[in-house]
Length: 383
Image (cartoon, rainbow, N blue to C red; front, side):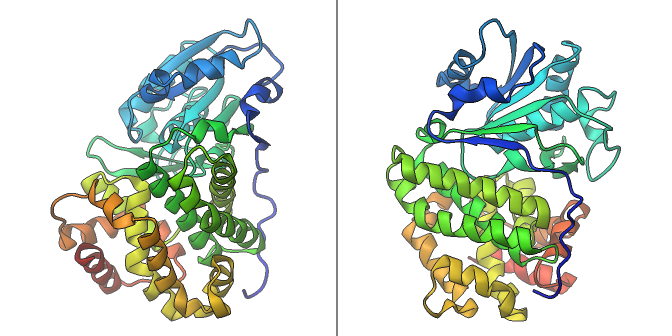
């Protein structure tokens, strides 16, 4: 790493309460004022009884309104509906419960509720709201790290994935309770866990890297590499579940400081075109781009190779070690259950080169010309 550009004036991280049954400590992290709570949650967690479990952990008499969204990634229309619900309360504490989609929705609600802006006016860095309502995030999957980031992803009417950012979008507090993640299906465990790994790797090797992103990323890599296979095999393994939950949050802290790269640009393009689950899509992006990125500057990847446990810590061996890990996790079988029957390299190239993906492309460890994007798109489709 050349020099230190630590960006120490960025916003502080949220308070984090972690451990088995940490949900019972929810009252500790809520604001003292008895404002009502708006619980942003997806319908699957309501059906599973986890929303009821959260409400039972609240201090007695705390009023709760639920906004129940559909499963799947947040849309502009869905976020606007949730914001309207929040504004009807005049003021509330926003509590997000779920995977990255529910947490992104909840963060957008907290950011937009005090403004007159619709969600479509708050994308790609436009019209940053001046403040947000109090917010607490409680993840039930271990992948996106959305619980600690200052960004959120939302799809427009055409299905294109767009990013939003605000300087105080990260919540006031986070509750990490691994018992909330033990009912996640094995395919989702693989996808979300690999998403956390990709976050860690891109944040500590990209153009925005610094000492803190590397520290977060290395620890996230160690934990994900050690725990993901065990957690997939036995979701009730609380030790593995807790390690994966910490890996995801650490990786979220890493990307909040260092950003993402080419794998995420490809993943967002795949999501926009084919609605492939995010963790699967970014893994396909990393599979296509990792060796290409390493070849330009192997030294950037040497610490990651060491954290991954590669004998000799050779960065040049990292791409093959990643491929071997995918085999161990039966990734191809998992991916096959969500991939379309055919993909177009030309359409993927066009979507990859679109405006929303440029920050990720520019932040990648290896700079990319348009010809590189076309080649990478072909690599993805051919895999």
